[in-house]
Length: 250
Image (cartoon, rainbow, N blue to C red):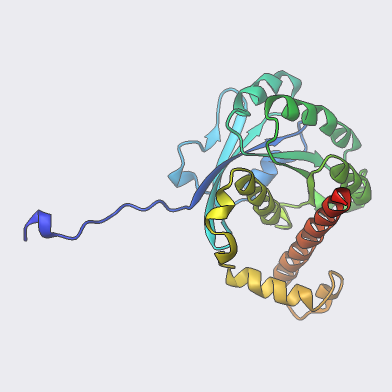
């Protein structure tokens, strides 16, 4: 058969959108834990690993409203001498995760400094506040109300997460992805025709029929209960932020 008459095989990308996110915060707040707990896309990324300049990176793909979003996640070290590295890597960033440790008040207080760095070197880039190590809540030094108030004051989405328990990590990335796509005008490409995954439809249905505390009483595996709680808290945070925005506009 002539090659000209053979069917052409078109190469397709394994994702619909590509976003670059930075994880910033003081050292020892668990940024590397967050990266290690994510699905690994290293085999298809030239950016994975640890560089000699003190920057970890990882690539992962999430499903967002029926679209595949590939994320390049960069962990700039929290040590002061690496602030210049952050300034360099912030170029082209489309989202920032401000990470602190809920068991370390000092790391939360340091968010102010990192927020100033972000506003100076990556102005306008969407940001979310991440309270890490929720599985150590019994050692908590930063209350959820304190962090949520800080987030609302600075117009940040807020999540408490635990990579160890697989709690709220994917949800926080999904929310930051939504903000980044909206800022860059890419969310309009699917607009009202977006397709919800079966998982999101199931979560939405269950959460609408119960409370966060009622989820514990459901005859479901612990991992699924954790995911449902995470989904419920994510939507609670988003609803709170939308309410604040509406109040400010009136």
